Image (tube, rainbow, N blue to C red; front, side, top):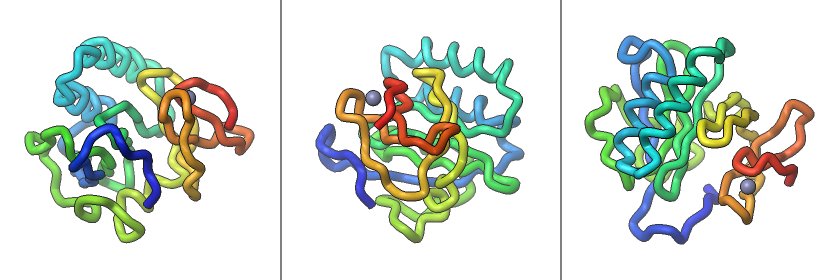
Length: 162
Ligand SMILES: [Zn+2]
């Protein structure tokens, strides 16, 4: 799978599956994961996450920045699927199984299920669908391109069209 690289060596993607019994919504799960980044912006992003959770009623996934590979959390049937980066310690999470092991590929069930799902970008407040085909990333902010409501590729970080 083509993804951006070059920030950190020995960095891998990671995916796992969590029962929906563990968290009422994707926002609570995101809240816990954001704090585990141990970044100076964690508190600020947690506030945004809590605020967004109060008025988003649609069934959306959440997105936020993590080291090298960003984090996507979304509902899939009676589970939460998470795709993220293994440079953070996620061992505290009550995950039930790996999505497909480290360095996800086409066999990763979480990565496959992510395509076409709608996500809210917690930092930028934008929303869009993860594309079915890899569309590259924005050269200004390294965000992977998503699809807007008109089916156009756009950068969820800057809001600009590809
Ligand atoms: Zn951008």
